[in-house]
Length: 309
Image (cartoon, rainbow, N blue to C red):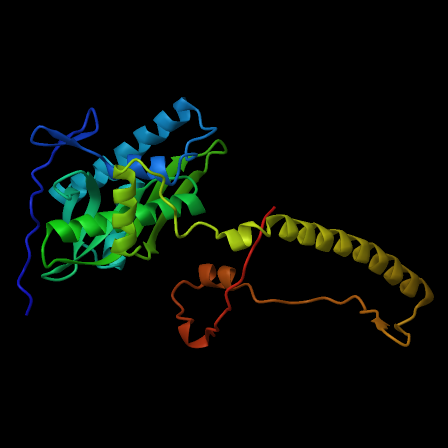
């Protein structure tokens, strides 16, 4: 049986007001600032300072409410806290620490939002996010952030292992129409290998630009114009074909013809009809006590690709 590991104190002083990390008389660099500098320089482009400040204030309030629950078992009754408690129940999250500082003891330090104990020597790391929309860039930044935290966590706590990394996405803000922008979900992230995380940190310390191995390769970037032209050609061809099909259908309906056949194609007119479907959502709402699991069919859906231009 593994020996129970108690989390080590990093010895780092965090100046919350200045958002600075100090180890003795040496100031250490934070991870989020490095990520913005190296990988996400355009993160806040086009967003006003007032909007950023309002988002930060809301996020701080949600973090504070949840931390008060985790540390003091105080439930302030906000929807975000209620949702957080439910997520912890649903995913069996056992709180170990909040704002837990991790460091390499030389150059880097940051606070991990949430540490959850899985077993005597295993932990999961979570990050509370209150975004209105979880974009692909935000997910990638969180993946990098938590992966680096996992590296520093295991470096600081010898023999400790990090199991899962995830975002706890919470939001409940009123909208102009009187409804609420309500989000409550957990998003699991795959860990970026430690070697790549160390390479990023070392590259930044050297004052160099990191080459992101997850960025689009030149092989595909070089074909961007070709892809764009093909998509536009496909769209134009579909529009032209739909115009022709519309005229064909009108002509066949006028002549009451069911099909036309040439040497190379068959054109068939489908007659108007009606279609009935079962409204599962409405049925569940009207019959909440009926267990439908025995009647549900599950099938695999292949992955697909979407390209927007």
